[in-house]
Each structure stands twice: as C-alpha cells, then as structure tokens.
Image (cartoon, rainbow, N blue to C red; front, side, top):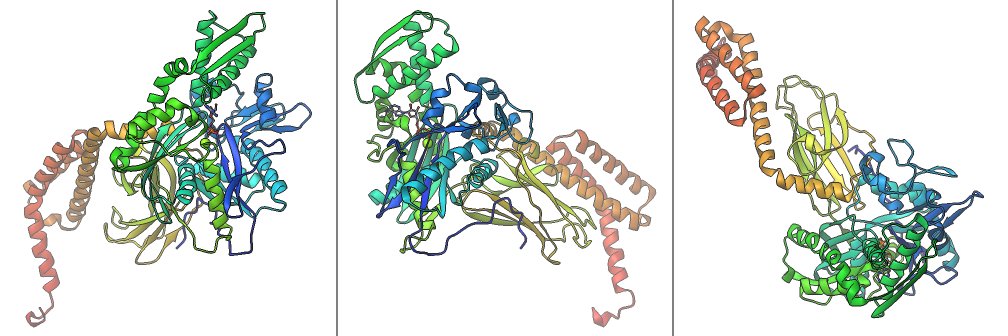
Length: 620
Ligand code: ADP
Ligand code: MG
C-alpha cells in the first residue's frame, strides 16, 4: 500500500561485529554523548575532561564557529552571533513563536517556513545551529573511540511533534550523522534505570532542565518500556531559579536596573551560587559592577529555598495531570526517576519525595541519565547485542484524525496511544457519483476542524461512480517509533490508492499542546453541541438530496398539494440548516420525513410493479 511518507525510511542495522554507535542527549541547555564500552554506558568527555557541552554556538568574526563553553562565555559580549537554546526554535516558525520572539536576543529573518537568525555569517536556522552541536559531539566520539560511527540515537522531548522531530533528523543529516532512531528523553532515562536496576512497574520521570520541565508516566516490564502519558511546562527550569536569585540580589543591594553587561555577570553569579548551594549550606556572591558599585551578599540554602519554593511547587500541577492522563494514582507509582541538572537541588528532591511519599531514584547522574539510556539503545540498534531487541513504546501527544463531512473531526489515533501504532478506518462517499475524496489530516482534541491543527491535505481520485455510501475508502494512519506520521487512502473495491509526500511546515510547541488540551476540556460541552448540530445538518442535507432525486424521477405520483407541502418542508429544513441548532434541524428533518412518507410508499409500489412487469408469477 502506498503510504504518505512523512518520515524518512526507517533504518535498522544488520547484526555485525562491534560497531561504534552513540547516544546523544541534544539538550536545550546542555548536550552530551555516551556510548556502551565493555558492557556499560559511559558519557564521553572532551580533552579538558568535561562531559556536558553547553548547547551554545557562536559565529565568530574570522568566519570560525565556536561550540560549547567558549561560545557560552562570549554570550555576554556577542549576543547576536551567539545562539543558545536552539532546541526551543527547531522545527518551528516565527508564527509559532509569537510573543516569545520579543524576549529572545536575536534578529530574526522574515522566512515564514523556518526560523532564521541573522548573524555576522549570514542567516542561520536552528537546524544548522543544532548541527554544529551534533558535529562537535560526533568528532568528540570519533576521537575518543578511534573510528567512524555507524550512527546515533538522538533524544527528543516526548512532546516533540512531526516537524520538530524531522528538523532534528535534518540537523543530524547536516552533521553527517546517521540517525538510528529518535528516542523520547523519558524513555531513554527509563532505559538507563531499567537496565541498571532491573525494575518493573509504573514509574514517573521528572525532568527539570535549564529552561523546561517535562514529566512522563512510564510502564516498565521486563524488556518493555511504555510511555503512558506526558506533560510539563516549557517555560520552567533552572533559569527561573537563577533569575529569582538575581532579582533578590538587586533588591538586597538596592539596585533597580543594570546595564546588559552587569546583568549578565550577576545572572551568571546567581547561577553558580545556586549550584553551590546543592553542596554547601551557604554561598557568597561578590562582584564589581561597571560603575564601581560592589555587590557582596551571603545567601543561605534555606533563604534560597524560600525564594524559589514556589517554582518547585509549580511542577506539581503537571505531575498530577500526567498521573490523571495515565489513569494511575500516586500509590501506583513504584519509583520516581529524577532527570535534569535542576533536580540536584535539595528542595526539588524533597518536594517530589513529599508528593509521592517516597524517595526519588537518583543514583544515576541526572545530567547524564538521558544520554546513557540513548547509548544503550544505540548499542542494540547497531546490532552489538546478541540477546534480542527492546521494544520501545512511546505515546502520541495529541489525537490524530480526519475531516469528515460537515467540518467534523473523526479521531483515528487517540491521544496517548502507544507507539508505534497503525489504525485504519473505512469512510464512504457523501454524494451519488462522487469520484474524488479529500483526505484532510488533523491533530488535536477538539471536535471541529477549525479548532484543530491541519497537518496535511490530499485527494484520492478515480473512485468509480457509485451511489452515495457505497464506496469503501480505507484510510490508514501509521505513527512509527520515531513519532512520525504517514497516512494512506485506498478505495477497497477497485484498489485505487493515493500517495503524496507531505512535510509539515511548522510544529506544535509544548504550550500549544497544553493549550489545545485545556481548550478541549473547557470546550467539551460547546464542542458536543457543535458536533450534534453538524451531524444533524449532514443528515438534513442528505435527506434533501435523496428527496430531490426522487422528485426528479417520480413527481408525477404526487398531487399538486402534496408536492407543494414537500417543497414547503424542504425550504423550512434548508432554513434550519442555515440558522437552527441541532434540535430544530432534527425537528425539521422529522417534519420532512413525515410529509414524504406517502410519496415514499407510492414510489415503492411503483418500483415493485416495474420489477414485476414481464415476469411470470412463478419466478417470484
Ligand atoms: P537541559 O536538559 O535543559 O539541557 P540540564 O539537564 O543540563 O538541561 O540542566 C541544566 C540546568 O541544571 C541549569 O539550569 C543548571 O544551572 C542546573 N544545574 C546543574 N547543576 C546544578 C546544581 N548542582 N545545582 C542546581 N542546579 C544545577
Ligand atoms: Mg535534558
């Protein structure tokens, strides 16, 4: 069957002797590369012994490119040419960013399909920026491991949609890296823990990074990882803790506004004080600002916790929602996996422990755990492991469906379906003699097309002319293990099928997804009314069409008064279709059916007589 391929053809490696494969955590703030050596996963360090690579890329004056710590240092002095957090922009458009664009220190190009950042070396897309990070990690791995890589497993947030996943793959391609698989970050963390601890049961992955918070509910059984639900907040992370402490420093020192350079300096000091406070009970912040002012503040751990506890508390709401989505309670949770540098903070650990009533799992390094799990998976996919494969299952963040007659959405793959998944549903034609059908693929929870996100539209042609409702068009949705969607449509009696290549032009970010989910809940009642209305209208239109075609054939069966009554009821129904609600449309449908009862009976008699004409009674 011809499939509407959005994804690249899947890649699975043939068994081989030991092949070099890596796992890459391409983070918003930091990125890491890991591999399996002598049976255990390890993160690889650069020449200076550093494992985390800040996800920052700088385009320098002499045409060079700096990646990592060096670029991060230049961020204060060269902000326009130093790109950080490209992951927030990848696979999205300026339109998706909306207000967010104003808070970012970049000059954006006017391209509508892909975000472009003006740098001194020309326009750069987030894909190119991410490719530089991947290139750096690739060469680090090749230098350390002494050979060419066969491929990499790259992790992405569970929320990433098609466009964001595709863009991540494009970045890998630009970096000359073969993608063995895209893997959801929480699943990678679970792999790391599942292997090390051989755990089973329902687990929560709590990932608080630099700028984002993600929570997932996972089901772990021997050799099988299944993501039951995901949630989070894309605008909450370690940066907010830095910022809170920074504001506190301003207050303490009676400052209201600083120049750009001073605030960057103070922010960096706030961050390192925050990190110090996970090990020490107090931190000393000293700085000399440009106008000669000095800052000298001692902050205790408990003061810092008081200042930022509300931020920690903000993570609990999405945790509750994810539990609800997964249909589990706190008591069902066998373990909580802590991921992300910000989970080093003690009040984060304590708050999570108090909420779940148990000490979180944190014996693996929270910065490394995602990369380690990805490395384990890469090792399997590269064919280095003899004893079978893991089946990896993730979930779809939003429902996928089709537009049906009347502007309604028929959900084919519900939200939180386990991946990979495929589902088919049969549709039929609405009009007599209809030879083409438009397949409109949508993403979202709402009932009406206009409230969901359009992903693709294509047309199946060459349906043989039949009466309405006779054709069987099977539409198949497939979402692969990377979370990429393909759709096919085939008419069953003739085998006519359609094929189209669609690449989504923009993606959905976490906030949009969260918003769409919220909307679907708060609009449920209104949506139901709209659906009922649209269904009634569809029914009305098909009744009118059927009566009109019967009138064209057999109107001689009616008296003038009968014909006038039917015309009157048709007009009344048409008016309700325009203006009425579900109930009034249904009432008008009932009235029209009633006034045509007699006509239908007469037609039936005539048809029977026609059928009998010329046949002997014995043949009946
Ligand atoms: P991401 O997944 O967003 O790339 P990371 O998981 O690497 O991010 O987390 C980065 C965040 O972790 C930063 O905000 C950093 O300040 C914070 N962090 C790292 N180490 C510590 C620490 N010891 N104490 C508190 N926060 C820390
Ligand atoms: Mg991370």
